[in-house]
Image (cartoon, helix red, strand yellow):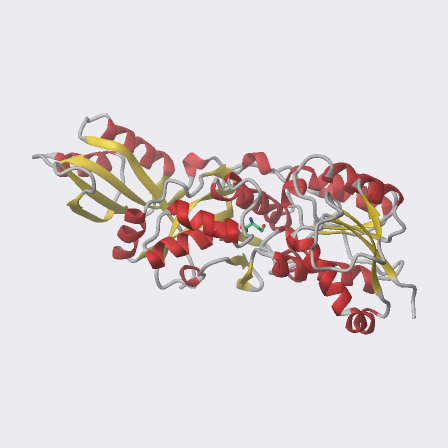
Length: 437
Ligand code: HSE
């Protein structure tokens, strides 16, 4: 049998500990499948004394992950530290430059430095695998990078953040408040260290930017994602959506348009009878629209130690199976130097339907004035309803659902309505996405 593949793990949190346990408990099975043993020989984490429920007696401990990357007796450096900057960036760069394969679950790092790191990996002739960086345990990177090669992709979208989906699902099913659901997600280990990353939509944006590159062959452009989070979604919005036949999900969408590629992350109305509306809790789902294949929906566990460890383990096993001269292709599906510049489609030209909720004074002419603003901006209405508003006996809530129109028309109509003096508070505007039923 070929020599054992020596693995060094940097970061022994929920994922690192689950991975360590999985490699140890499946030792014989992995050796049989890969034709060589996989052995964790070195680790690095912040606190050596912490009980993680794993036996570290036979591994070399490094206090400094960069030392593990530079001098550990390993073939593969597994980066589970997180964060776009140091130490993760230094460690991964050093490991690749030294000729080690790298497996990482770090979407922030790849969103920022992915093209550069893919280039370093190519130069060094090693693999940079990152299945766990997007949609947890779902094999979406392999699908985009390998399985769909040759297809032209028009749109890729999905639920990419388990924490947000967990929060929205609990709010909807149990009529609970946002904060309570967030605290529960954190307790269960789904949320990032800083929850703003999840609820602000930034974690989804990082994952989307990586998928965009793989789907469209463009350089990763994580600064060019339009981002709105879920913190201003209320239980009233969720109920109103439901009455009108929709569910609210935080979606990441990358779509080819006539002016460029849209990358957008925002709360989105999806039809109640669509498959994506049924994706509950921490589950993620990704839909890929490809010209040869048609539409592909992948769904599964998107966050948590075991789901992420499963994807990391698959990446390590791929390395164990590869042989010199028979390795997989470039990290981003095509050589880093051949990725095209990303051309952004402006959000103002986005086309789709919209849900708009307004708290308005209950007086003669308001309904007509709202309808007039819509008509003035060329917006056709699918429905318009009025009901008593929470928090003000003189106020009514008016909810509009539009047919397909442009973002710029909606913004102008909403500004026009606000300028007429009968609206109280901030209008709620949520985009509607065309989805597979
Ligand atoms: N915080 C992330 C989520 C973890 O909730 O999906 C996986 O990236």
